[in-house]
Length: 218
Length: 218
DNA sequence: TTCTGTGAAAACCTTCACAGCT
DNA sequence: AGCTGTGAAGGTTTTCACAGAA
Image 1: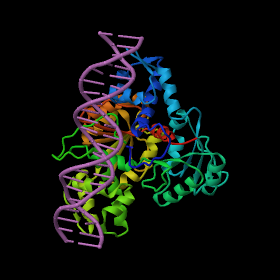
Image 2: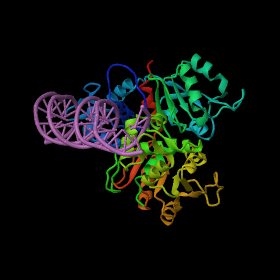
Image 3: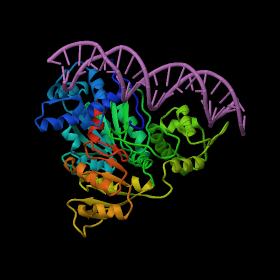
Image 4: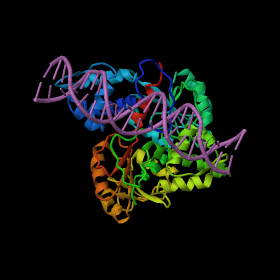
C-alpha cells in the first residue's frame, strides 16, 4: 500500500505497530542486507534513512517502537538491527508460499528469484490448465487447481500469491482462506473481499502506472 | 502504499489533490470500466465504494475535489465519472511508455496485457543484452540499451518501467531523467535517487511479501 | 560533539453528522 | 424518501525541537 496500496485489512496481535512502520521495516531490512554485503557494521539513522528514502527522525521513531537499539553518538549496529527486524517481521525461518495462476504474469513471478532470496519458499504453483506431470518451472511444480486446497491444508501454508484472471479471483481467494491462508499478495486487477483476519495487499500494475501518469506534466 | 519513499512534487492545477485521492482515482476508474462493460450507467457512492473497497464518504470526498458530478437522490453517471477521472489523471490519449530491462521480470511485464488495455503503449523495451534485429516480444521491439536515450528523447516519452538489476538501476534512472522521463515505475529492488520533479513508484515484490508476513500469526 | 530517543506540535487523512438538492 | 456534498470532529502519521547518553 500503498499503500499501499489499494486496500488492506487488519486484525492481529497486541503491540500496535503502525502499519506504515511495519511496511518500512521491510525496506530497512533490504538496505541493511546491502550494508552487510559491504561489510559495514555500524550505521547512523541519517545514512540508513538516506538509502531507504525516508527522514532520519522517521527511521528512529520506527525503530523505537521495538526498543532501544542504537548507541547515542554512534548509531546502530547493523547486525543487531537486522535481527530485530527479522524478529519483528516474524521471519526467523522460511515462510512457505503458494502461487495461484501460472499465466504470463504468474510464471514470470515463479522465475523471479527475488522471493527465494528474501526467505520465502514457493512450494508450488497451481493453475486451472495444469496437468499432473507437467514440468517444473524453476524447480517449482505446477499442479492442477483442484489439488490446491488439500495442498495448502497439508503443508500449513499461510501465504499466497494470486495471479489469476479477474473472473476467478474471488473464488480462488475464498478457497485459499478456507484452507487456512492468512495473507495474500494479489496481482489480479480486482479488489477481493476477505474476512477481517485476512490481509490482502493489492499490486495492480495498471493502477500503479495510471496513478503515476497523473504526475506527468504534458 | 504508500507512496514511494522517494519523492514527488506538485505543480499541476491549483487545487492540491491529496496523493491518496489520486491513487484511489485509478482504482475507481478500473471499477467503472467494469460497470460500463455491464451496461450500468448510474452508480451510487455506496455501491461504487463497495467494489473499490473504500467507504462511501471517502469516495464522495475524493470526487468532490474535482467538482460536483453526482445527482442527489440518484448517484453518479458512470460515463461522466469516467471522463472526469480520465481528465484528472491526464490521460485523454495513449501515454507512451518504455520498459528497461528485459530479463525474467521485464519480459513478463512486456507480455502482460494489462498495460495496453488501460491506455498505455509500451513503445519499446531496452536491454543491455539486446542486439539490433532481435525479435519483437508481443509486438514490442527489444532494442540495445545504447539507443535508449535517443529513443526517449525523439519520442517524447515521459514514463518508464524499470526492471533492471540493482547494480544498474541508478545509472539507467539518471539516463532516463536526462532524456526527459518524469515518472518511473520501479521494479528493481532498490531505492533510487531522483530530483524533485520526478516521481518514482517502487514495486518491490519481496518487500511486499515480507510486509505481509508480519500479519501472519504462526 | 555526535547521534539517539521522545514528548509535543503540525500535517495529513478519514469518518461523522447533517444540510440541501432531486 | 434517497443520495450527494461538506464543515467539523476524530484519528493517524510525520516532523520538530530538544533532552540525554556515549
